[in-house]
Length: 288
Image (cartoon, rainbow, N blue to C red; front, top):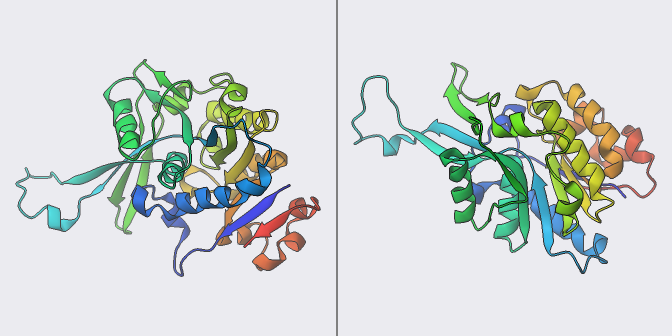
């Protein structure tokens, strides 16, 4: 059974906003909506999951975000020429979702790879401060000079825009199809949540993403997939080509209104008509 959730965005919100991972956890509307959608359907779809002690496992990359500090914090701070104050935060859509679920009382875990040492500890400490414990076997550590991916919000003349540096991240370097025993990680879980951010990050992340979704069903977990297309990671059509074959493993698919338009559906209430892959499943229905 495939449920389609369409996130209705505020008027004037553009696709470039979806490349900004710098929202604070207490203002993370998209992760909160994702967690709430999963929770809303969990009761009817996981009635036989009495042995499950985790409500949600999410899988994806953490990011360290750097954006200019608000002007009010800069007035009395002496800086050398060319220096500026920035705000450092921990982000990542899937990590945000695990934190959001934890904040509303759900038991969540985040599966990922972090560098061993102080950079990885920044992520661990930030999650712990929000009530989410990051630990093995869900988190693996890379000790060979890897880092955490970063996003710097920089005004490039067209306004503040995110600029990503992911090439040496532990997540991108270490991941492969056998990094995680997905069956063992997902057997205690009711839901697996993934996004469309992970598959374009390289062959290793793609293979792990596919394996996680394919292992969920046999482990008794339902799959939530937030497409969450990021233009900086590649064309929409390329991402959709990776997602479409995996939809047979997905219970909850989350799209934006703009995603529907890109898929040829200009009237969300008619999704079954304009999306043959959805209409092919007689039990599929949209959550609008």
